[in-house]
Amino acid sequence: MAKELQLGEFVKAVGVETEPSAWLEIDQDRVNQFADATNDHQYIHVDAERAAASPFGGTIAHGFLTISLVVDLLAEHMLVPAGTETTINYGSDKVRFLTPVRVGQRIRARQEITEVSEKRPGQWLVNRNVVVEIEGGDKPALIAEILLLHIVGDDM
Figure 1 (cartoon, rainbow, N blue to C red):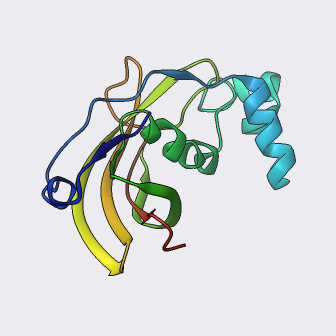
Figure 2: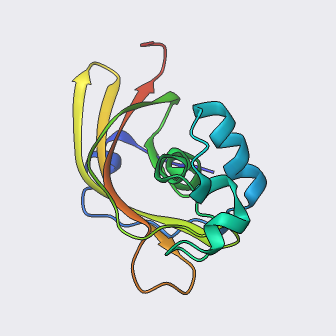
């Protein structure tokens, strides 16, 4: 899970790239559940037979499914300030979906801290460059700047 750093050390973590996450297989059941949750039942996601005849050669994960998994993938090796009570999604910038993730492929995430700033006392906004890789792939599934707000202690 996340690694806590004392505040002085955490603030100096800009430029630090952590270990990549474990691989996560994207299966059809997960894609179907995401389609149900978002009402996006486009055939390239849910109809294996029809998708096989598409340029993708089979069903693919929704881009937003892939990005929605980023925080979970990052959590395994995320650096956080000591005493973090909660971490909140704050936004994302420059998201680019570069390669579709085919059902059955495995993905993992890499992260690098690019900026740390104190929004309010005990609230640390952290920008991370994130790359979601596809196992054996030449290009990543996506790249993005992810912003997470770490709330320390009882400043919630």
